[in-house]
Image (cartoon, rainbow, N blue to C red; front, side, top):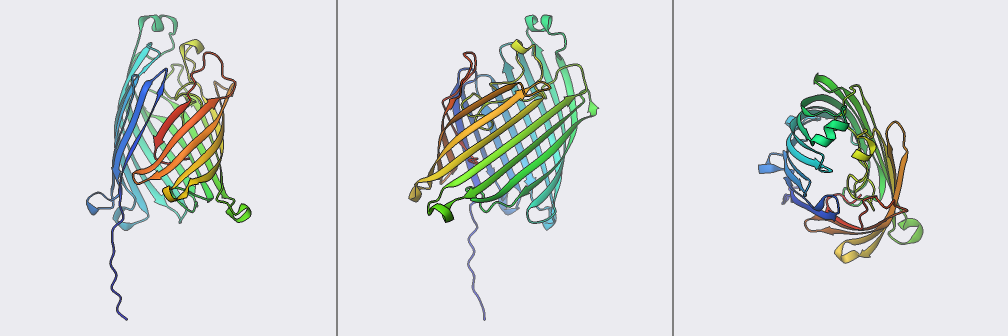
Amino acid sequence: MNLIVTVTEAKTGNIMLGGGYGSYDGFMINAGINDKNIFGSGVNLGFSIDTSARQQNYNISVQNPSINDSKYSGSFNIYNKESTYEDDYTDNSNGFALGIGKRFNRHTTGFVNYSYSNIDRDYSDSTTETNSNLIDGKWTTSAITPSISFNNTDDYYLPRSGISARTSLELAGLGGNTSYIKSNTSFKTYYGLADYLDFDMILRYKATLSLFENFKDQITDSGFYLGGPRSLRGYESYAFGYSEENGYEVYDRMFTNSIEASIPLIESAKMRLAFFLDAGAIGAQDFDTTKAGYGAALEWTSPMGPLTFIFSSAINPNPTDRTSSFEFSMGNQF
């Protein structure tokens, strides 16, 4: 039997757009464009930008998911970033990263990444007079980061079952003048209730744990920040991190977790409604600052990709906390 098969290539390019407003950053816009099969080569090429009144980030990345049709992958990215914090200091940084990975089986992948960055930090006179342990000037970071990930979810955009987990360990001190260890571990699980409720409700849970150990007395930019749609909704991005009030002490412990219930809203338009509860903790040598938020998110799998509108509220915030009631983003929904 002779079979005639007509193959049409799926769309491989996408555009991402997101934004919001906060009293600290002002209007924030993040955008990106990438193609997973540039010129039919199978190579992923992407460009992204994040900009606000306080920061401008630019990133170009190239990834080959299967070098010469093998189980090995490779990646390269270069970036430039400028950030202003509390009008006390400004960071200008740039660098690159080069990595290679291997797929061990259908669900498990290992990766090793090398990164090199230059940072030029400029403090105001009042800051350097009272905080002698701050780095003022230029320094470099050279680090290697091994990681491993597992993903057996049943759908990329809207999983109803499965687990997605990843852990990494960043080791800095292979050259440069900084020395630290940073670990990041994340876990996500999905559970559909359609078989029990005769209704397409999806329960989701995710948790992240981040730890940092610095081997230099001087403070670098390697601590953690809590807040925003990626960690703790109801608060602005970077709402909690080292600040002048805390003597610029690096926050080296952070834990976040979220639970969501997602239900269909307009199935023909691929729109869903999710109700969420977020909780997180951050601190220096301890998880001494705990915060929580709740709200609802309108999820729409649009022709341009997943679009999410987030309506949130902080739980028992302090008067000085930077809260946020609305944000939107484009990209992965959870």
